[in-house]
Image (cartoon, rainbow, N blue to C red; front, side):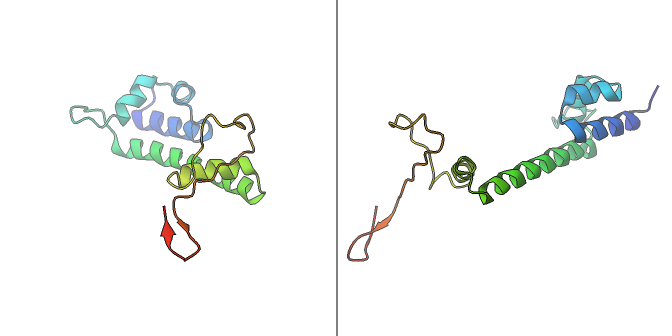
Length: 126
């Protein structure tokens, strides 16, 4: 039988390629429950493995980086859907969707919400 450290290493190698706990656990020869035990931070969990949990987190964050790079690449190609998605999620206080408008079925529609404006006398208004 493989040692626990070998199982964890095999799991992480597979997880880095597919980001799926079930298939990675099966590949490593362990259960999903084992993975959750090793990553559960509750104080009474004697199976918690901080290094393993951090490795899983790092893999997840690497994938987030890949996704962000792909969104930025689409933004750089003037993909308005990607631009809208990026702005709504990175600056939601300045960019948000309005529901119920006449053009809601149009995926290229972008609603701009302006919070502050300047009047004719250069005074800021809300």
